[in-house]
Length: 258
Length: 309
Image (tube, rainbow over all chains, first blue to last red; front, side, top):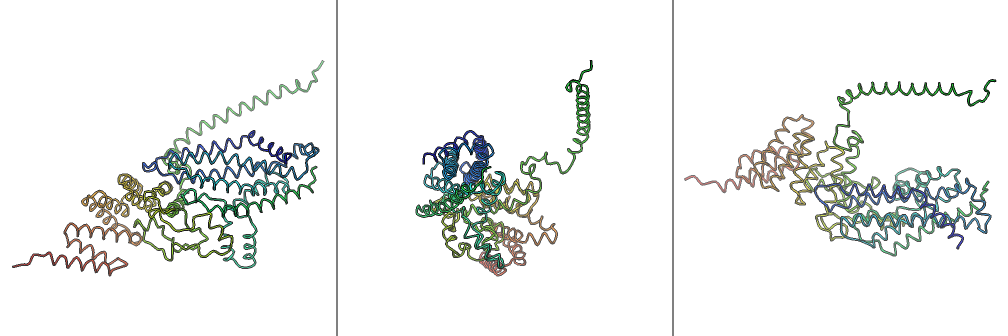
């Protein structure tokens, strides 16, 4: 466990050494503040558009950080040949994969914490309330969803030859799931066979990342989701993350590093 | 002894090349300068010059921005429902006309079916489970919003998208009408008037905007004289419209005639009111209601008439 944590620690240090996070955070803050300063019919209490924009930026930034950070981990180690001294130590390949996953996922947690803190302050400055349960649920489920994305990108980094290809494919897949995942079964009913069955199968196979998107509920001040439902969603995501992690471990075990 | 060092041997050639590059740069700069002096004059007179527009959207997107105007109009309607809104994959029959527009009277409603059940029964466990993570209950911001306890003033949340929609397509009249209606409902009469006047600057003499401005004067500012002038101006603008435009403006013609008839009725001018109602009856999709209105007006006129001795 300590080996895994050490590798994870290195990944986290890598996050704050690089400029990605700072740039994205400053950009998000800047856009949100500019949008918040717009005068709309002399009404200072209009806040939902600001919450929506800020949350959209947070989602985009978090996905960029999660996918790019994860996608470059293994290829970077191989290119710089640091993978060999790493594996020469008493570290198994499974520990390397778990360490990389944990590092990227915890890095996402730190990122989300900062982003959601900013979001909370920005929203509170306008609406003068702090729906802590809603924000906590939104952030937790967002982080859980990023766990699936990170594990998926980790598998991609072992399958695809270049980090750029992996990053692009991961973005396409995640965007597809978030935008269309919920509607695939409806589309399946409107197309002829065998496309219908293929879409239906795809609908039940893909990880439904849209479950973890509580933005609409937060923006429009809906009551929090029931905690039991949240726990079920976490279990659902854990199953997919576990599947991808296992696949990554198996692939990495058989992977020739030269 | 000859110098065979390759570095010193190449120096005169390299220097010549550097000079040629420098002269080329100078020449290109001169050409650019000359062309710029000529092109600037042409660009300033060019009709497609976006730089003169004060609108950031117009500068950034040109006419392509109009494609997105409807999207943000619908977005405002989605906000009115606190995010409970059909996607393109759902049954859209009950959302053909945005509810914010239908409620404001700016558009004739074409919605059919039940607006609360467009999601239908859940199709599978993923659908059933997923419905707990997005708004899946029908609500209106004017009726308590998402948690049923929000104030009616929360309807202000639709305004940013309406403003954006009007920025993207200033020729879209419905945006001004609907926004002005909701601003008036929130008690922001001055802002509503400013916004309608902004719309009239973009669409001079538009009958729908004149009708809305008249309504503002009649209902919010208690100024029937100005309201009558505006509505009459709207009607006269409609008379100069082509047949195709008249067909498109049928709804606003009905609204203008009905509003003027009501105003004349209140001002105790039954003759004028009856003339307007006869015109309204000819184009109304519900002539029966207008006939009842005419009969009521006739009865009231006969009752009030002083008997001749």
